[in-house]
Image (cartoon, rainbow, N blue to C red; front, side, top):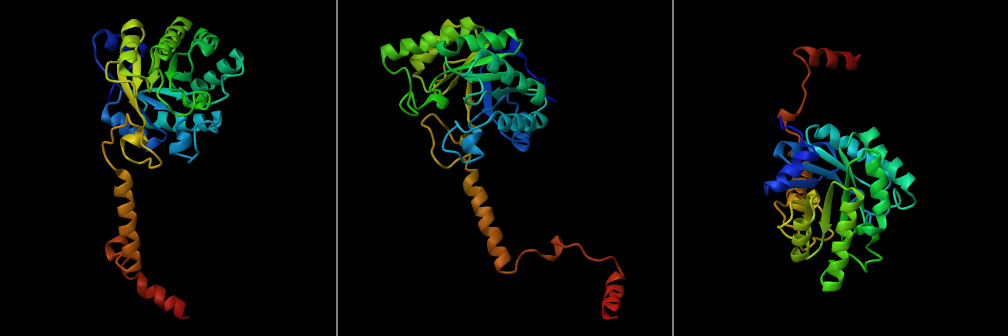
Length: 282
């Protein structure tokens, strides 16, 4: 059984230049696989909106949906550091709302930390949640919940001016008290500078390999999500094809009378068939 990592472990890993492995998970069986694989962290991301529910984006995802999925993942991976993702409008209105909803993740799903999007604009939210005794992971760069304001799902910090804004956000997140930071879709030159400058662990999703760890969407990694594949994704298998082919084979077997076979059936106990036949003839 793996020992669940804590915040101080991730800081030690940063000091020792050991990379942190982080994946999303949305359900009990996938969480079991993640723990068996030795993952350091699991994010129950609001990406579940697209990967589980088929929404066009993350905006429709609710707190209740996130809590249900976090609860399932915790049962599947009791020995992994689990992060709940604060969905759209669960923290934007006020510091009080932010603290209340962050607390729900801990009280109702036993997560170890929460993640929320934004830099300078959410500094007071981060500070309030941290002061409530909850571990916070910031998220800057491409922030999907506010992608409309960013002009779509586009990489951020590609000019010197924009890069300076990303760095400002990173510093603001750390100053507000966040214990870790996720940087998404930012040039590696910028992300590397952030990771070297900040004292907190900095993780990458589409921000190069010089950060303190990596995050990927599990549905991308295993080839399950088919709508689109971001540039930064590496597919390690193609379960969509495997599952579809298995279903096609099943349909073929049923239509051709090849399934079920005798080995898939439960027969009556010895001597009971004759009694049954006699009974129905009366």
